[in-house]
Image (cartoon, rainbow, N blue to C red; front, side, top):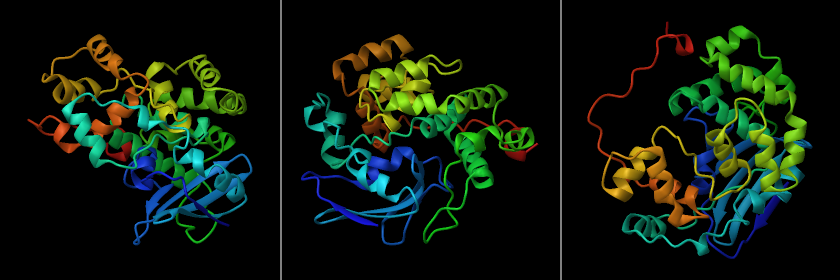
Length: 302
């Protein structure tokens, strides 16, 4: 199935959906040689593989699988039609330059709370590199082959598939026991989560925060992936204080309360500010040492 969507404003597919990628090896998110973006998803109507490419007349989309019609219908929301970047006032030289450079960046809304929640839980207390490696190993092992012309890709596992992951696969993937317990818990409540997503953003957050193991940081990570929430600032993020302090305050020494206070001026675009900084290499402080060493028990390295 095909669709050409002309939003009437710039949309950069790669920039907008780049935050959904779980590491370089993500089997659900790949790029074609022509610059097109290929993704998979498990929609309510079934699995889907879709290909997106920006064209002069808008965004060209192709989709395969039982979830194709649902995905194409949701394409505008996926690419941020509900986002309002035009109301954002950068009010800082770094952000002003980033806004001019990153034209077409929008906050996506997948509507897939459970998928986004599993990804966020895998990120808890570990580096992004380790979370991506865990996701890749588990999805390759327990996700079904993608429909359409890219069977080497995988569709994210269903809630029942996540519940069926054996203990040794969690261990091989390096997932912390606390994260395993939380994923199994939310997999048992996935239907209620998806119903909440269809009501309102506030209801979705209430459902998320009612689950043990899901706090403000995890809920915010879901918010900017699945709910299109441009204000979903993940307070407590490992890099947030350093990145914010260096780029916006001229210091590395910011605590969590100071970060929150600093971001207040940009409501309701706090996540947008963070994303602009993430996509601005010059905003990051220089490294003064090697990367943090990975624990030897992760991903079969012991």
